Length: 585
Image (cartoon, rainbow, N blue to C red):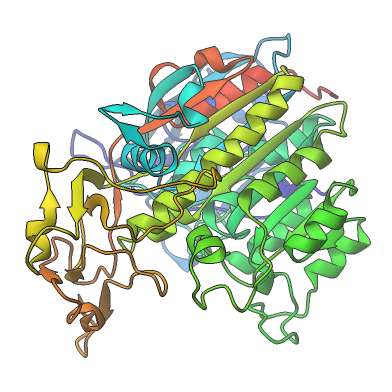
């Protein structure tokens, strides 16, 4: 396999020092970085002026860095043509566990960082790891999914979600290196590398390099498993496969929008199962609908390397489980929401009418990956929880949460016959969403605000699941949940589900500012809500609230208390004993 580490990649971070004084050098990996023994990374020092390479001194626990890393460094006298220098040593590692102090000096300028290098237990605990990501998954999404899916009577839920019974639980901090507020790129990247990163970044530290593909790399879990074991790797998402969460399993870029390049990174690592949307970036520019600017046909390349191609639910069901390597591309962009695909008689999914459900993709991925006696790592993302929470479309978000939970149920069923499987369910970040009561259409009058019930006037919603498929039979019942977001642009609150397609809360005016979408203005009872976000925001944003994680299986006992998101990588690495050199199997 071609090593990703031979390709250039880097990122732009301005460190904050609480003394208020700027250091003359910036070092990557950053201070307090934790890393796995033998895990690969790029070492970089950025100087704030042009320096003489003969005057640079770099010590790793008192030893010259050239002795520690017997590898050729790259000195850049004028980085990106500017009056600043840099030194880079690519594809290095530290094989002995312990505390490391890195000291850099150039003339009178000195700086240092401290790293912690850990080794995993020698005995492997888990054969398989399944990581579920509900993108943007918040507590209210789960509560709403339980109420809509299972019902509630006299204060007690009538049933439990599959997630509810995973025994080990923790809170996760999600902040990035450059902000307390994070996006899916740096949060998922933390899970996949064990290193922090910055907003919009995947598998790199944010340096000052101008080229988004020229930042200090952090080896991803997908790369590590493929480099050091004979395990299989699977990626499943109902977003574009180049989107931040699935991309983080293999990718290195400062700019998550480098989607064409991310497909190339997927091809370099070659996960055994790849299922999702985003086919437009796999196709050459000569193909109608392609979003590439070159003539590379990655679908053909994957097929030439032995991948079975499936393009709809029918072919996935017919051919998927028989494959040893599987590529499924079911939409040119993000796949469509389960509410539109399965329950509403609208035109949303008419372009791709035979898209598989996340449950079907999960089951097929398990069927293929379980053929490997050496075990597997599988990442499954319910991406559309986030993509519908941004436009304040909570009904679609909660239906997508139910779909996530039903996929977790499939994994739990698999674990019953494969008890050496660890299951982790979490999100990458949260949204500011809360359930406050109910909306009752049968209350008198036309003022929808007066139909909102709180406290004892809320009562219970009247969703029903007569066919026991886990979803309410109707989303537009007469007594619904009252769900609101705490951050938003200007928009018209209608207090009703949007049956024709996703909610579009705000549109741009002639000044480039986002204003309330007047398409909803004349819906009876609609209320204008003046936004609390900058007028450059067209949708709601992520919240900084802690993320909840739950887990089961061997190694999951380490999920407890409060954890930084980088610690999830260590939980997985420990369970699979990945820190012992080239472990095969």
